[in-house]
Image (cartoon, rainbow, N blue to C red; front, top):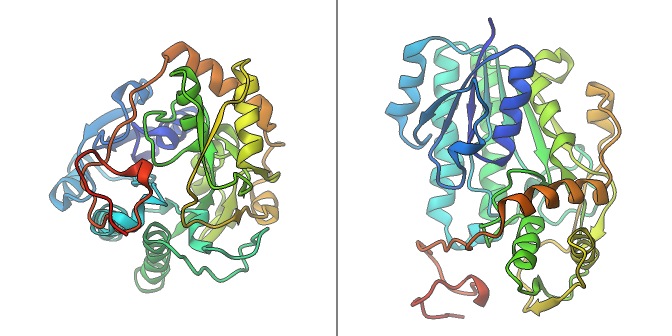
Length: 337
């Protein structure tokens, strides 16, 4: 039986990829440090191991129980905007932890390393962005992701490690962590509505993104090692149709059958428009038509209503508080400009 390792298995995308890997008949071992995920997300039949990819001894020990045919690396702290202010934490978790996995995959001759990068590698490139655009990341999160992409290319050239890279964007859906106040705007809006609070929008809300439902992303990631034409390539993956953050807020409000109450916060440094083309992934994977935004939001809203609101979690270990958005300022930490 094909045996695979999935990092970030208790998280949002990782738990869905694990489910699809099980459906493919794979034996799945999943790891997570539970910093942002929950064991409740881990599908039945996954052999779960708690630990962090930054612990090299833990990572190397995963192979003691047997070899892995494929490694799916989804573990990351994916708060792109916050990454400016937690630089050491970002690079330790998103770059050094990834290298620990790549080293072991090389040493144990893994047949395919599947990596979830991010649209953040493109920085503020003019959309719609194709894979032909040379990445120019503008924030530490995107820099870390692109560094891992480059390291995989180097590992392929020198050691022969096959890989597939996906660059998803603005993914939402069931099992997303709605308690995270720094990322996942769909979940943030839903949690604010459930808590009786206005939806907070940075700036004028005219920023555009293409919000991607989880079932348009996770199945392709799971299937990647079986698609030989995908090897040693990078793919944009997600929804095609962009909308503004304000339009998203109104769509979420409609799903909860409430009037949209919006509070505008000071703008923060971010790409004004970020969405990509998906011609390449369609040619290689031939995916089904994507789920419409209204349908995807309705599905996620049903799940959120069943679980109720969550208390937003604070990130206490801010390293650089200069120019930190006021709404992200932990209690007791003085604001600096």
